[in-house]
Image 1: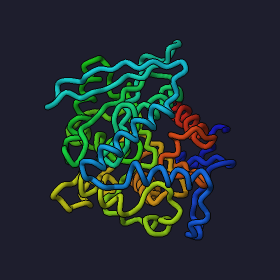
Image 2: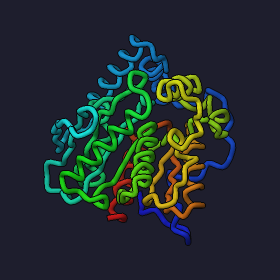
Image 3: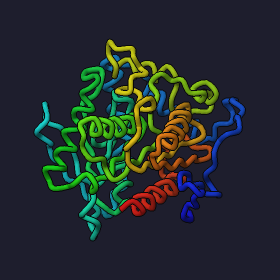
Length: 332
């Protein structure tokens, strides 16, 4: 995948072979799903039904852990567990490092996805490993507390504690790239916004993969692309949203929906999204609002790809991770 050309404002990059701005309306027939996407939808319906009943959550979380073990790259990588202390509770975490020589001056802080109801270190290892290989530096992932047992703001509190741990280790804000996918993309943005609120320096850059930015689900893609999405449904979104927000229903609040926050001062941001996502609008609108508020933002749209496709061993995922690596190197 060749280096992405920039427009005169330097805000949007497009790879001619795989990326485009999906402005045209796609017919919503279910039979457009490819065989791989149908298989993903079948697996996802079992492990991520959206039910927050204890037994269902246990099955979903176990399924994600198994997925992580099966898909995570391992060659040339090492995993070192640790426990982050200093916050209200200990936070399990893990370093993913390249065994060969690599950049030790910078680090990626990775926030895993899972609708704020699922996701543990084994599941996080999939993208943490790919990020380490793409960025050429160590990646720290962490197991923040999950909903509904621990609704907002538990996950954000844990993220701040891990950020503070990196500072304790000697990393400055400009040494840290924050990455996240799906709900982890929401958490990455909320972490940056919390640092801004506290008057602290921003990370070097943000990497957002299919970020969940609008908990009101107001974007057109929630209806227009519902039959194209092999991963997510509106029922799932409503279920995990209720678990995360608990008794609160002010979903448009910037603490839940960073799309509606004051984004000024946030660091350069790379956003990646697939055309076949009901969360497509979350990425498109975030990119537009970042531009309007003078935040450097690059939006990459991947044709016929689904929610967090970067996890899968496919060509589009490899191209996306290559682009992540180039974006990070341009920021360092």
